Image (cartoon, rainbow, N blue to C red; front, side, top):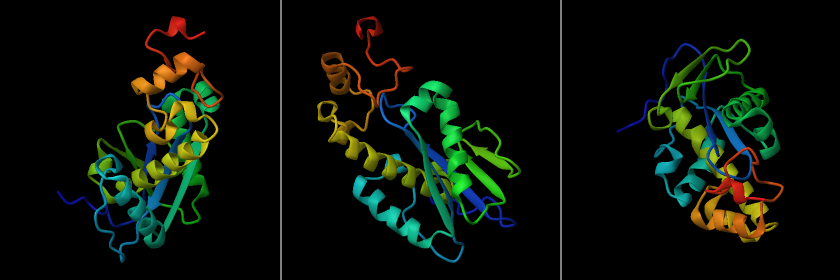
Length: 199
């Protein structure tokens, strides 16, 4: 099913999405994207439905063709301080803050959001599979976060973040059990199935 390019045609709209709510380690990333109505980007979809190669190719095309885009993040310490839901919204706010071209409407993936200053927003459930701008934001957030996790993998290779991106896989939890958590782990999360045995 083809995704909708714009929800309306009166004002510029930015699609907003995050990547990294569920992992046990690393930041949450968010992106905001304003698509250009005159430039078509084929193959946009929810980033989770695309292969790594396709996401990487689409990222370059999004960055080349979009009227504006920005990426931002909150690290694991901020996530522990604010909680993951609020941190996701704050990461979107930081991305919007960076945009040189300001949108007149925000399309948010999901059913909740913290209002951003004077820009109205619409929450769209499964928006990354329905609206092109949100799909584009999901691709940028996902690829930038995966790239970051691959970089910090070299610092702590025992957790294999190049493969699991910090998500709670069995192997990741076994590594935490064996080596303990590191400075990138989210201490407010349940790092082990039996949290009592963590320390």
